[in-house]
Structures are given as C-alpha cells and as structure tokens.
Image (tube, rainbow, N blue to C red; front, side, top):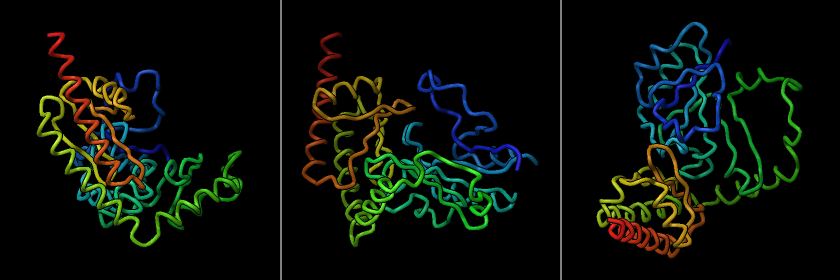
Length: 267
C-alpha cells in the first residue's frame, strides 16, 4: 500500500516529546479535527488514516464523534484503511467497551493493550476480515504473543467489563466525577480552566505549570500524570467507588489550595 498517513494532532508540545525521537518515518501529521487538512494530505501513496479517538498523551484532546464519522467517509471515498488507536480509550474507559462506539461507526483496524490485560502486559490488533486476512500465518511473529497467561488475564477482564450493568456503572461514576471536578474548577479557576475527556479518561487543563499540580497531588497521596497542552491526566480504575471519587476530589481541592498558598508565600 505504500507509506501510511497518520492523521493525528500536530500540536503536541515538543518538550513533551523530548527524548522520544526521532518519530517513525512514513507518517504525515495534520491538526486534530481539520478534515480539509486531511483531504489535502492524501496522495496516491497514502494507505491509511490513523487516529486516537481521545488523545491521552496529547492532553486528553477529544476528536468529536462527528469528526470521526467524517474520517470514515473520507477513508471510504479514498479507499483508505481507517485505524483507531484504542490502547488508552478502549476496554470501557469511556463508558463503552470501545470509544468508537460513541460515534456510531466502526474503524477497519483497532489496537488494544493496557486495560485489556487488567495490569498484565498484553497487546492486540483487531481488524475486519478482508484486512486481517492480509496478515497470513508466519508474516508476523512475537515472542510472547498469545501466551496462555496473558490470554487468561484478558478473558477475565472481559468477563468483568461485559457483565450486565458494569459499563452503566462506569458512566454513572464518570458523571459524578465530572460534576465534582466542575465544582472544584469553579472554586479554583485560577488553577484549572477546563475539565476534559469522556468516561473515566479525564484531563484538567491548568492555568499554571501542570507539574506543580501533579507534585501537590502527590503530597496529598494522589497519583496523577502530566499530559500535553499543560494538562493533568486522571485515570481512575473502572472499579473506583463513589467514596473514592469523593476522597480524590477533596485531595484535588486541597492540592489547589496548597499550590495557591505556596505561590502567595513566594509572592
């Protein structure tokens, strides 16, 4: 098919990528959400469109569901393969088994990992029959691929996630978390300007260096992680309880107060 065209955001902070280069060759990047830029980037060599439905490392930046549907149409019109990276967004993280389900369309190929193994290392690629058939037996191999322990872990995770009511509970807890975070943002608008994400993949857009809030949260014994676009990422387990959500939000509020007090002292 020639080289692959990756349609992912070009706006990630370069300092966030320091030490992780050079980037894989053969991918062209275009701005997230810009359908016209995607169309302009397509050439006779283009094989596929690759996107993360909600960018994790990029700052919990959400590709709208309507945009994903537009990508499906563009791929179909140009005979391209549409690939979704659901390593972070899949396995119930957004309140549905896979994030693409919110858009009402399907990709041709999808990558999974992380949540699929419930903590045990695993990776998987799902593909439509006609595309998957191109990878014949022996064309690709991996030392640990399909090992019994990983498969057992994945099956156990699927038993839990696909149980009646589990994903409904994720949606319920996600709504509670977002409501509490909106209250915290209102109380700390000097610290937090936006609550992003879907389900239990949440980002707090910061008005100060995100590392300051992450450090303050660690002092509160709440582990978070930075992401691009000056965002703090929250990825609670899907089995988080309402009590734990409330406790975490209290810690976030306290961390904001701690950072503010420190800034006032320095000032």
